[in-house]
Length: 426
Image 1: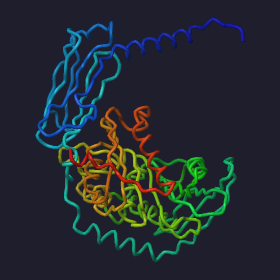
Image 2 (image 1 turned 30 degrees about the vertical axis):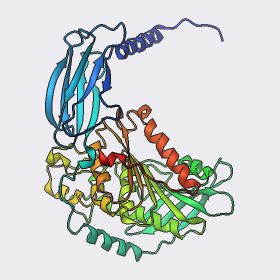
Image 3 (image 1 turned 180 degrees about the vertical axis):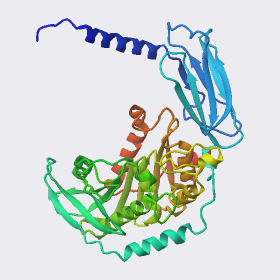
Image 4 (image 1 turned 60 degrees about the vertical axis):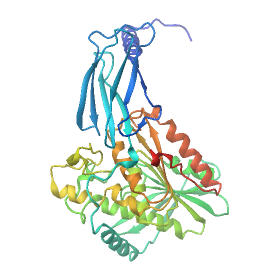
């Protein structure tokens, strides 16, 4: 191909890229006192701050703000890097997440830092409703009275050795819909149920077929009662529907559909009768934790930055996240308690793996730690110290990706997932 000199637009784009790269290169380097990002009560929490070689100190230094649970400001200051090295430091005598924002004086976007102080000791913001179990047990009994009447339609797939179907199953006042995939051979297979992150969108068949090619019986469940190949039919503001009553909240039928999906898999003759893993990210993790609390057939839980925890946190000095129910409305806050993953956690007996991003503001880590702490069964935390939400910093998700793969490989081969619970002693 002949060489062509770049035009003005190309040169402008190149200049922008080089300027952006230079700005990033000039940002200070923050090294946590503890690589794990986890500290004991009263222990100094902080970061050593240095400059890349040859980088001049930012004029006027860098302003920083430290917040407890990304809510209450506990310290502000300026980092003076005139000597090439400085530190940000604080200490807390109570369990909390520490969230730091550093303003770099024009050298790129503000930098976020996160740390955990005695996370195993974090407790729910509000008590669990006294009738929580009675409410959900009554809904599950009503669900059991609804015939499943599954309808499966074969779908062409380019994945060799895999069968794919759309699925529609009766549920309470709605239907479970999604894609089911299985290895194209005789046998019985461990089941993997995948729940979806927030939004209204068409599901990708490969999410199911890729796992089925590994040997799983896979059910990729749509969060909504719509065919899995559609991206319309539900309001994008579904999280607000009926949110002033536990009887009308959109999440009521969503969670019941999730439980019905588990029940359906357990009826299939190609299920191995032993393993049902639930898995999801963000709202998919939220659904996974809820259904693991609702349905004892679940044998393992794998979630990444699950949403829906500590929904009343804004009223108690702990920044809440998705579904972002308005804390100014008492009825909404009361309703939220019946759909909060923290309150499903005491019902979870299956071994659980949960990852949290320490600078995540969509699914704040404080709520995830609280939910994990309420699970009576074995549970493992995967701290991702530099991670915001998965769609914002996907390159910081390696710890979850590696550990979840290890656990899935163990379960696929018929082994037992034994969570590392050392974090509970910190």
